[in-house]
Image (cartoon, rainbow, N blue to C red):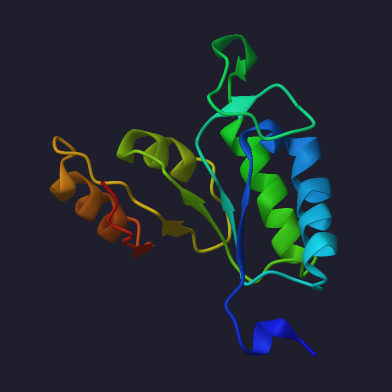
Length: 144
C-alpha cells in the first residue's frame, strides 16, 4: 500500500544535515524509516547549519553552529527532487532576509514555504511582497 495515496507526507532536513553531502543520505534515511519511496514535501527545517551529529540535540550549542552554504544545500535539495525522492522541496522557519538570500541561489524549482512564524514585529507586508514578487507558494502556519 502506498501511504502517499492517502496522506501528504512531509519531512524536514535537520540542521546537522544541512550540508550538501548530507542532504541525500538524510532523505534516504527518512524514507527508509518511513517505508516510503518518496515524500510529498521535503523542507530545510531551519536556515541554520550545525556540525554533523548523530542525534537531534536541543538547545543548540553555539560552538556547533556553522555558516550555511545556501546555494550548495539548495542544489542538493533540487537533486533529491530530480531523483524522484520528493515531489516538492521548500523551507521552514526562514526569515524574509534568509528567504531572499535563498532566492538568489534557486534555479529551477518552485520553492514551497511552510511554517512561517509570526513574531510581533515581523513585517508581514515585506513577507507578502517577497512571496508575491517571486511567485512563491507560501503555506502560512501561524505559530506563536
